Image (cartoon, rainbow, N blue to C red; front, top):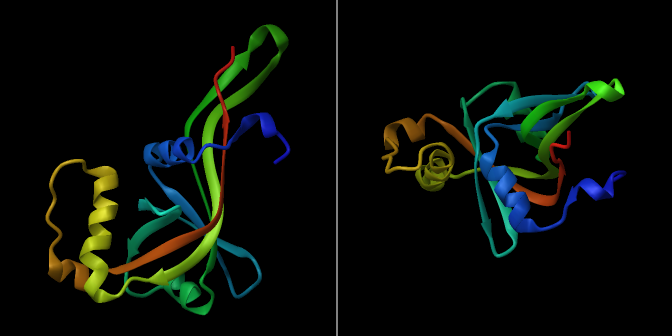
Amino acid sequence: MRRSDREIRNIEEILDVIERCETCKIALNDEDGFPYIVPLNFGFTHLDGVTTFYFHGALEGKKINLIKRDGRAAFEMDCECTLVPRDSEGECTMAYESVMGRGIIEFVPDEEKVEALGVLMRHYHKGEFTINEAVAKRTCVFKLTVTAMSGKRNPVRR
């Protein structure tokens, strides 16, 4: 990382940034050699030092085909993005917090879908929520197990 002064080294601080992000963008390996990037709603766990992101979508489509072909993926999420003008200096910067990394995507088996969707829902809905099992059966649920991750921030400085 070029700006090591902005690196977030503490895993608890990285997890705090993840908790405050609304979407996670994943980059998949497309057949034409270019990355295919898609923003997704997500939930996550961090157990025994392993971070896992959970996503959902349709049972078919380009994203699903690419995951079936190659489960390697990169991800990025950011929050607290604010322009910080420095008018007297004739410049500006951007305040932000971000997390990025890579991992392996796998499809969640049918018998684990309700639990995985519960993880996803808890990221957005803090109260009780019952997952409809019939809906879960017709939803594709997949998880990304993180193999490398880093965090970065530029706090507001005026």
